Length: 180
Image (tube, one colour):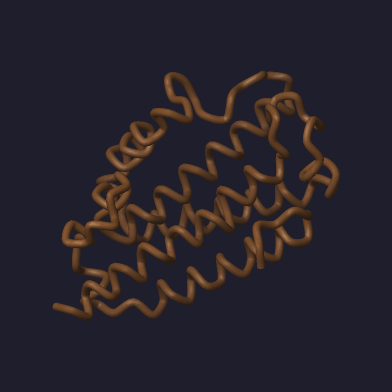
């Protein structure tokens, strides 16, 4: 399935990838859960996130914080408080710094709490997506505050696409653990 372009596809992809992610997580061994992520030996994994995240908690927190960005952005703009998607001082060129701040903020958060807030915020994002029509989600220009993008593309990014990113990282970690 390609990137969702309808409300139905968005909800289906978000639910499917959420389920796949939870299934993958539930199958992690004690060794996989207790071993820190280390992708330093893979030259293809150059993006900052491969160095940033060290465990499952970090992944859950990353997903949770991006859910919060979307929820706060949509609710603020619906209430007439114009806000960009990324909070000041961040933009699409330096948002990696924001991700590091999220990581730092949650270093004392437990895995259990991280999983709980992620699951709760996933439900909130889906509930919010359901309040919009297909046209509101996937027609460009419906909401000025969404810029030149369709609102639904943000929902896809913080759910289905982000869950896919998380699964790729966990599978790479699992592969590393198998080599040990």
